[in-house]
Image (cartoon, rainbow, N blue to C red; front, side, top):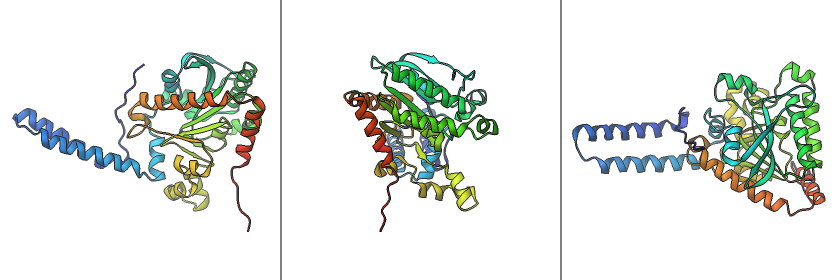
Length: 324
């Protein structure tokens, strides 16, 4: 399946690029209407636009990466399934009478290897967002994921999780039906699985809602995704009683892939096409697939006990501090 996305929504910091593109379009139109040869001027502007874009995207602030991670045209879980997997068969339900559509999972093949792939799905329009609850899972979603984890463990299938969520659903009903307990159960049980687990944060990775699918042997992030214990807006509301200070919070929280790679929270940063994943679904998925295949090929060589021990030690080592 071929995906190619043109930018539908211009982000604030991208407006200078749009202005240059307008000049290019005007010159092209003038050239066509007048018959004048303006190719040299057009090429100069095109090079200027490309150089500016490369410079811009190489120095993005955390708050700007936040905007890209939340871009409405960013690929969703099922887009990645279409582009990365073959023969996907979706499994439904938590075996307690519920099927949370925010979490979708099933068996598929990646490079002809059977895997269990599970992800958090967002919608592309209002109807879909209502179906997928805006990518905010409820307890039954985490219980469904746990059922699929155990199924994969039983049949020795590597697990791949793809995460893009603003957080677990914070509604009263979710709390009444055990939201915290469902996430905690996933954290505990994922740490005990004996098969390889690869997790990728592809957009938003907020709080326990993301971690409930990310206790993995390899945790990766797309270049412009973010991963954090709390949203920058939530952090700003708590610290400064002002959500508009989210840019300051984003800087302080160290939410970007480069920061988290340096801190040892993630294991790999996966590059995106210039402009973000929404500009080229195919290139993004191809980069992800290469990282998934490489990680699984390395992990399957390890014994079940080694996988468990290394996974445990990996997460225990996070948040280290020094006492003087």
